[in-house]
Length: 262
Ligand SMILES: Cc1cc2nc3c(=O)[nH]c(=O)nc-3n(C[C@H](O)[C@H](O)[C@H](O)COP(=O)(O)OP(=O)(O)OC[C@H]3O[C@@H](n4cnc5c(N)ncnc54)[C@H](O)[C@@H]3O)c2cc1C
Ligand code: FES
Image 1: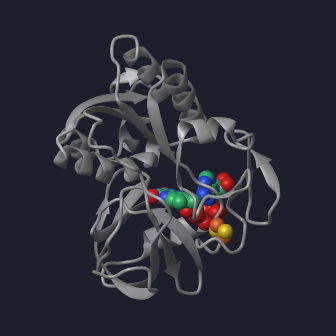
Image 2: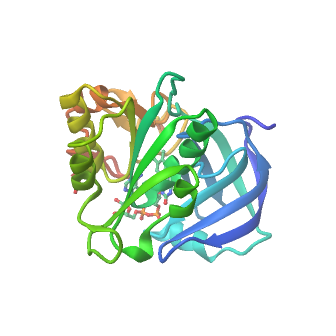
């Protein structure tokens, strides 16, 4: 299987996952761990990071949020794109973690679905808290259901419990304990999940996002309190994130300007 060498890959299949997200499956296999990402190059447009939502057969699941992702959503099966990677540190797993919880918010489910499948293969009991703004934005519910119990919540109450993934996770902790918790989603959600785990002494890891340009530790655009998210992350443990003053507080835009995390 291929490793980090840049290569051209053909989009074999495009799956419309929900109102905002499409999955792009490529004619390429990569050795990768859940939580690692690739840099995807759209010729003439830009290059951006995306978590591998499928592996070893490469797939990425992309929410349409701005110019690059809008253009990506317009491409057709058969087109060629550039891929570099996989990059970064994925989730580190321990065979002694028998009862685990995944907390996914929105497109964050893209990083956790392959993790759920890896954990299931190792025999772990998996509970997933799957949150989205509304029923039409829930991602990979069937993949998580194939791995264990799934508790759905939506901000508008259109499916599952009304409210945030954090609120549902907090409620769950009143009756359950876990060996480990893995999260991916909005930064404020990850912060709160890390805080709840820290209070209870539960091991926690999360995949985080920062603006990336090079993806290989050279440009410094992704730095989070001195740590290059593209190399030392994107997966960090909860303690590290809670100690990081910038996490869930400020992020660097493309220009380098710092803006508040919403
Ligand atoms: C390691 C990593 C893995 C990622 N995996 C995925 C994935 O699996 N699926 C997916 O849809 N997206 C993922 N992203 C985010 C993705 O790279 C951005 O959504 C994409 O760059 C947006 O490009 P754009 O030109 O469409 O939007 P832009 O015009 O760049 O941005 C539109 C809006 O999204 C915000 N935004 C842009 N980039 C980020 C970011 N990195 N984090 C948070 N907000 C951002 C901007 O502030 C702006 O408000 C990942 C990012 C990183 C760093
Ligand atoms: S993206 Fe350049 S150092 Fe991380």
